[in-house]
Length: 172
Image (cartoon, rainbow, N blue to C red; front, side, top):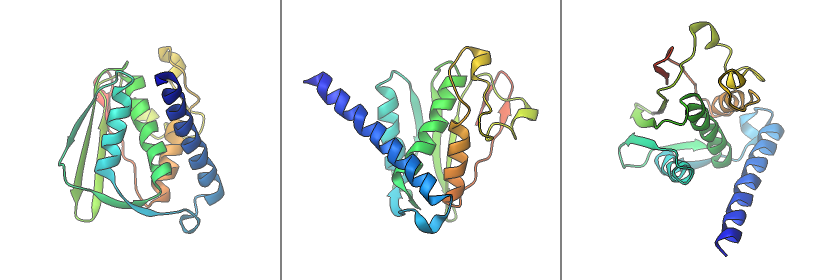
């Protein structure tokens, strides 16, 4: 019964991802054609923290417990955040990562920090391009679509992604 429940849960996650990808494709990055709703970013990050914990991956969550409401498509935003978090774990050799969530004026600021290999300055502009990956160089799998999709989704909701990194220290 536990195995069937796990398979059902995984199937639901895959279905949500596929639905999100189809929504993104249909939207063609046109905000007016995506289903937006007010969602609590604090709650979504907490949910992702639990999901990654089941994979024995540790997220240290540095955030106030109060809601941080934003207007977005939950499925698409979850895909973007999952891609960012997965990338952080991948390039930090599965070391714990930190996520901080703060608010400044009317902006929600979510910061994902890893303590891995870092990104060379000349590569920072390349990491959000489709099919660009360094995964194989460090013995990991990747097609170079995760950060590209994350950036497209975040831009869709009028957000921005900024990167700071130090080689062999980590990235945010």
